[in-house]
Length: 84
Ligand SMILES: [Cu+2]
Image 1: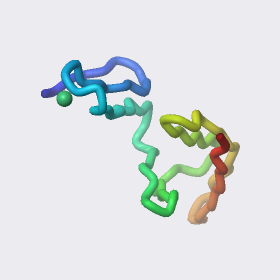
Image 2 (image 1 turned 90 degrees about the vertical axis):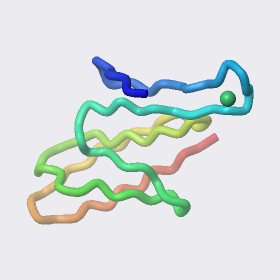
Image 3 (image 1 turned 30 degrees about the vertical axis):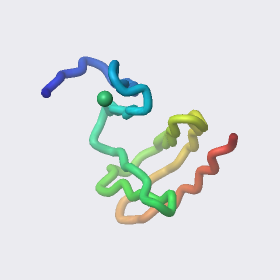
Image 4 (image 1 turned 180 degrees about the horizontal axis):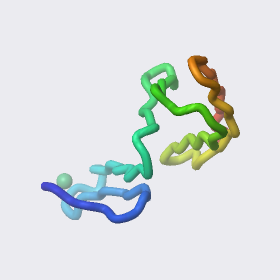
C-alpha cells in the first residue's frame, strides 16, 4: 500500500480486526531524523551547521525538545530524558 501525506504528522495505525495490532507512521518535514536502538540512541548525520530544536517522541511518554547548535565538522551529543 502506498500513501502520500501532505504535512508532517505522527499517525497512529490500528487494525479493525485485531485490537492488539498497533503501529505508528511518522511523516517528517526533513531528512534529519532517527529511530532509537535498543539502548535508546540514534544518530542524525550530515546536519548543516545552525541552531536547531531536537524533538524526541515516544508513543506513551510524549515528547521532549532540546535546543542544539551544530557547528561545521563537529559532532554534537544531545541527551534527552523521557519522563513518565
Ligand atoms: Cu489485524
